[in-house]
Length: 283
View 1 (tube, helix red, strand yellow):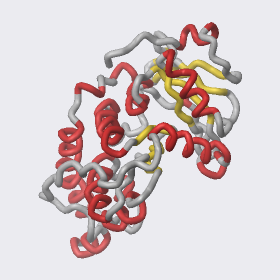
View 2 (tube, helix red, strand yellow):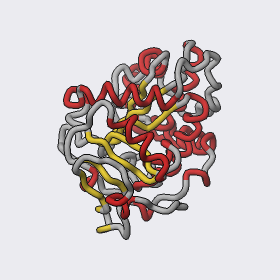
View 3 (cartoon, one colour):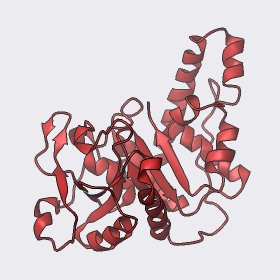
View 4 (cartoon, helix red, strand yellow):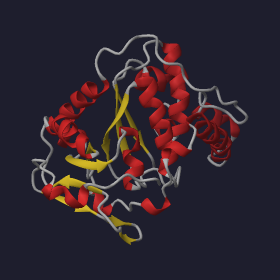
């Protein structure tokens, strides 16, 4: 992907006040030619995210919480793939989502046909998009104004998670990534979490950029194959939520396909409507 100067090699002399930590250059294909991220060696504190957001931004570094999850897999074990990552700005969010939608609804129908008779499959996924369902288009910007600044909302979520990270995530550490936009953080490190869905995470980052613009979204947490996004301007009506749920389904089908009741309308109501955090997981 297109890159900006990486301040991580000079982090020790940057003037940032940091806890003990580690630079990560480990990738699926061996050591990268420069560090991809830095993360603390110990648990995140509630003030880490906002403090490093303010201090790191002047250097071109953005904070994100990283989690080892229940399997204790930290970034050096994430199979990062920076060499296979393009630039998010080279992709159009709607084209990306429309392509995922078209590919997945047909694939989902094939999968249903393999689990039993058609009636059982239809009952199991009665409100999931069926084969030939047309892409509904991007969700509109919510009519309701944001209650607070997007970075303030992200800092609040990061603080809540850091205060009880063991309960939320199995542990979380503060990290710094060379990126200018929160949406670009996964691409900047060559994150491979969605590998079974998309080999080039920059395409998903193009969608995250669109969510930044429409919903004041920020990437707050990354794990081996998980992501948590703060939402400063969530959908406030069920119609808005249903429109956005279609985008979530294209972006991360496992959120619906592998989470009962496998129902897009139920997902819209419970996971999207007025929700200030979105969680994604790719199998």
